[in-house]
Length: 115
Image (cartoon, rainbow, N blue to C red):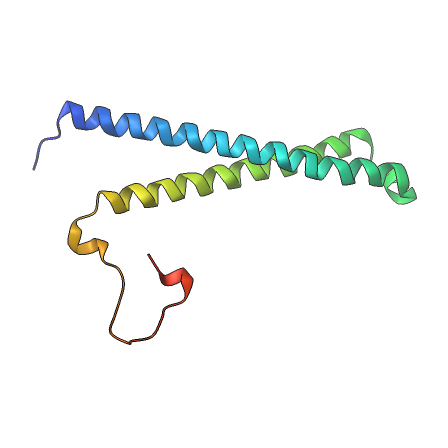
């Protein structure tokens, strides 16, 4: 079993903190955009549509808006964490694993198969 140095652990901890900070910022940006994007039609529909005016009280309006914002935050933060983890795992991979392209068929691969 190999030993892990203190500097290596500190470096990984610093990388994890930076990644979580980036994910938090990405989630907050997405939540702000989603709040605006959901608040405008929600509040407009309550003012203009008779059904919405009769059935959606202020608590319901706040619930709709905050649910959309919360979902946007967690989806954006999760996507950011996954993309950073994928990028860092690719950077730390051995050289023989970095070449993920397959040249055996002679045809182009779809974009989602490209590294």
